[in-house]
Image (cartoon, rainbow, N blue to C red; front, side, top):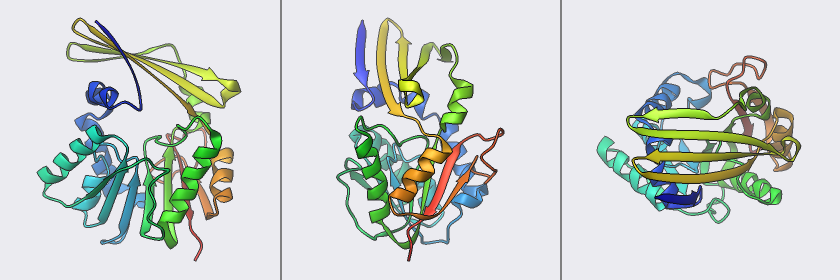
Length: 249
């Protein structure tokens, strides 16, 4: 049996959940919050996690004493996030909403967008609008932290298909460069018993220069670029493209 889905479908997130959100990934988020200067906020900070998924960062942020809101369009992912928060005995406010529809102006000290959750709208103007929504959500003086896989990093890693096995399940991922490196297409094939599930995602990829310019155009100031959560430079040793910026007072 073959099923086909897209990244905007809840069925996709449910089917691929074990590969996307392993316990190792949750532990990694906890470790980053414990060690990263970029993710070190005063206790009680009002944090908005846009595209929060199953609470990878929202739950450990709440454990650390922050006032956390997670926004995601996937009901299935939010159900996982609520369960995880309940299991940890913490309070997190979750909102099922598209990022372009969410509006709570000047309500947050920090806005997070983690693990390449940016650039997925087909119209480039909508991706600009996401940055404007992040700006609007921040109180004056608030901080944006935007984490993606940078174009420079992806250029080193677009290789023949990647194969990942978890138990008896097999995932094959194939990446294809589109539009002279403006976008990337990722095709996923999951083989689970006699069921084959296929999904595809196309998203815009950005260099450090491109993403920094977009953030400035949205109104942000003090734009900084880092190559990892340890605040390393964005150079040949970079692991991520992380942009930190401030909404001016």
